[in-house]
Each structure stands twice: as C-alpha cells, then as structure tokens.
Amino acid sequence: MIIWKEIDTVLFDMDGTLLDLHFDNYFWHEYLPQKWGEQNNMDLKAAQDALMPGFYKWAGTLSWYCLDHWSDHLGMDILKLKEDIGHLIKERPGSLNLLQYITSIKKRMALVTNAHAGLIAMKFNATRIGDYFDDVYCSHDFGFPKEDVQFWEALQEAYPFEPQRTVLIDDNTNVLHSADRYGIKHLLSIAQPDLSRPIRSENDFPMIESFEELMNEK
Image (tube, rainbow, N blue to C red):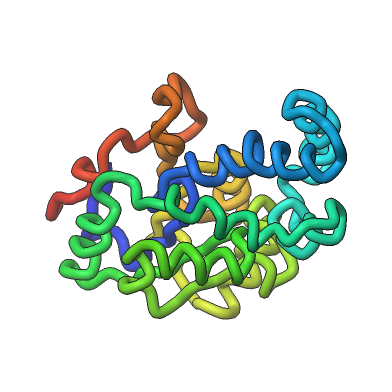
C-alpha cells in the first residue's frame, strides 16, 4: 500500500485514524443530547432532533470543531462533558505499533487535526500517541479546517513538506479530497474509524483495515 522509499513525511489525523471514533460519535449523538435535554426538559429523542439541524449547519467548518463555539451556543461546558466520558478514549488497534514503526524507519511525522487544543491535550493524557509527535498542528491555529485547501497552504508554511513525497492518513473523505486538491500524492482512508460500527464498504480513497498493512520495508 505504501512504498516507503518514496515517502519523506507522514501526516496523521487523530480522531478516527489513530484513535477510535466511538468516543466522539457517542458524545455528539448520545451523551451531549442527553445532558442538553436534561437541562432543557427534553427527552433524548427530542433533544437529538433539536440539535441535529445545528450540527448539519456547521459540519465541516471551523466552528463545528470549536468547543468554545458549542459551549457558547448550548450554554454548557463542552470540554467538561467530554471529560465525563474520557474513559471511552482509546487508540485504534495497531496505532502505537505503526507510530513505532515509522519512527524506526526515520520518516518525519506530524499530527494534523481539526480537534480543539483542549481536546488534544485530553486525548494525549488518555493515550500514548502524543509520545510520538513533536509537531502537532491544529486547524484552529491556522484559522481553516482541514476541509479547506488553505489549511494545507498554511501547514506548508509552518511545516514545509514535499507533497509528492508525503502521505496523509485520515478517516474524513472531505479532508482527503482537500489534500488531493492541494497536491498531496499519497492519501489513505480508514475502513473502520468507529470500532463499534461496521467497516465502511466504499470510499473514494484506498482504505486501511489494519495498520499491519503499512508495516513493510519496501
């Protein structure tokens, strides 16, 4: 799937790529609606129905990924609510082995994420993925989500890389399309971002079912 001699730089997404997306899906679809519903005298279904239009409205924008936006919009401490279910944060199978492998073959690695800084810190505290990254780039620092080509332009200035010798691994198809438009050559998706949900049947990009597929010296 990857010919490593053709790669200098590996860009990793965090949620749904190195970490199981179940934590995030459960939070937005179940836990947050439950807590917001309790605050507004609604049952879970009514709260979900009330919140979903707003979720769709902001999807793919920087506001969608901004915890401050949702805290202000919903009148709740979103980061605190996420901490309540922090026990659900976990690495996807093989994540640490892959990070160790790429370190051993001496490729540059950076984490590129839409996640809010407070959430990055929480997930680094809950897992060991942060041990492998000196370079972490958050879309909030650049002012553009990864779905916007301007994110990659800003990343290039902060962390110069050769697009033709770079691989991006990300579970978000819209992000991969954005990176493709920018010119990043090697783009890989994740077959099962949320381990509690079925493997995805199709994608616009090659999908990784197991990180073992990438651990070869070719």
